[in-house]
Each structure stands twice: as structure tokens, then as C-alpha cells.
Image (cartoon, rainbow, N blue to C red; front, top):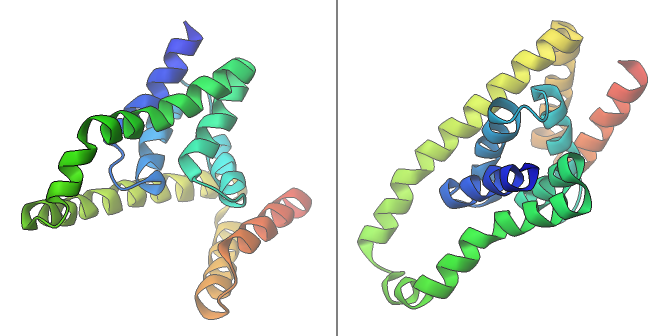
Length: 175
């Protein structure tokens, strides 16, 4: 039964996560944290931080790690397959149609309408991470991490992977 749940947990975000991996993160979080209860918000945020520090698509890294934690090697394989299966099925079935209508104004307009929804989902996820951070380490540590991260990424143009790694080290030693 756990393997079916792993498949569902990653197949549904794969279907609904229009816009790639970052768009599916809130959907995966909903399945993994709220629906199945395999992780807490804090654990999920740590998995995202770890996955962001590695190269490759975020959705498959999440599926591989969480699938492994829940169901071992087979769970990892099922999670990865469930993540790529919707795109694979659509590419096989609808590839010709997509190529034919890729420059259609209606298709471009659809993409513009979906972007705000993705932004809202990512905003809600960020808000829940901030609340969890505030409850876990306190307001001052959260503000320090936010301020330093903003400065390094936006002002000094440091790659986010290095900022995440630094925050992990900071949290590991000082928190």
C-alpha cells in the first residue's frame, strides 16, 4: 500500500505542477506533509534545502529522497517514475499537438494565466517555512538568516547553493 501512496504523492503534483519543479514543490509538500504525514514542515524544508544544493531537477530529487525515506530503494524508484510519468505520457500522446500549436496566442495566454497561481503557491509555501522557522529557532535567528541570505544572493550575487550550504552549516553548528 505504501508504494501506491508514494506513486500518488508524486504523480498528482506531476500532473498539476504546470511550470516545472518549482511549481510542483507546494503540491509535493501538501501530499508529503499534510496528506500522508511522512514529514513535518521543518523536515520538508530541510529536504528542499538539500535538494537545491545538488544539480538536476528539484522534483526528481525530492521524489527520490522522500521515496527512499518512506519506501526504500523501490520507493525511490516509484517516486521518481511517478514524477516523470505525467510529462512522459503527455509528450508521447500530445507531442505533435504541442509542436503544432506552440506559437498559438491562446497557448501563450494560458501560460500567462498560470504564472500567478504558481507564484501564490510558492508564496504560501514560503510563508509556512517562515512560520516554522520562527517557531523552531526564534525571530532573531530567522531575521538574521533572511537578511544574510538576501544580502548574499541579491547584492553580492552569490549562488543560492552556496547560501543554502552556509545556512546548513550555520544551523548545524549554532542552532
